[in-house]
Amino acid sequence: MAPPLYFFPAITREQLAPAGKLDRELLITADLAGALADCEAGDCSLMELSGAGPGGHSGTILCALPADQRAPTRLGYYPDFQTWTEVTLEGPEAAGRPLPAAGRSLFVGLDNEHPPGPGCLARKRQIPGYDVELGDGRPWTVPVIRDPKDASRLPSRWTYGPGRKARTTLRAEYRAVWESWGPVVQFFFDPTGSPDLAMGIQEAMDRCLRVLALNYRVGPHEQSLLDLVGPDTWDVILAASVDLPGFRDVYDQVHQQRVQRAEDEQKKTEQAEATTMKNSPATGDGACGRSTPAGPGATASAAPAGGSPGGGGP
Image (cartoon, one colour):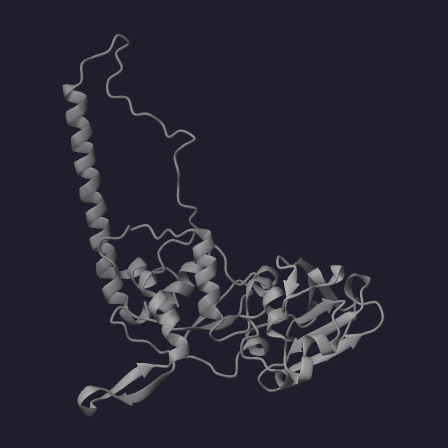
């Protein structure tokens, strides 16, 4: 496995890492700030190309080195052995200065013989969880963010509370993701929810990448090129993030409650429709209580397929 290479056209090494520090504004513009959040200049290898690189441009290649600091065999521009994909950047400015025209795009290079995987994209600090096979066919560790009892495997610390009572608290940098995961816990464990696990594609992808990014240097670019999250993996990833395997009996009970609730509501609806039909006067053509099909104004949840994580979960 070899980590991805990121080529910044028309950007010099000094611009990318002034005074030996990565320019975070440039990373934000390139949509790499999340994937490379744990990287400092010393964790990266920078190579400035004076000649023609990807797209025929000069610029600088950035490679975030794996945890073992071993650089890939082909660190540079080797078009016969690499596949480079151009990504158009949405933000035209970085650090308050306009980027050159060629610098408004980013090229991501993958080694054809050694594509990236969990080994070379793993962050130095790993959060425990469940191994889940993603779209590339490899197991990736999905950390447990929040379970039905609000416990977590995110990094924590021991502190004293009121009355000098010892307690465990999450580290500040993980508090936001823990708090944002309440809806995911409800998605799986709220008895009043739908028995059909449906979530909008945008939310599903965003949440899956957020949990994977806790352990790996992945973001939108890596997802688009490696096909990690998809219709067959999103629900298993989110199920692992709320420790569904450890609360399987609770989930099964909740699911049965959801099914029973949906059946009861369906019976009530059918009874109400039957009563309406019985009390409605007959029309000239003999039609009685005909339902109106959904028109263009009807909406439906754009839900990825995958069904209940009860089948094939981590």
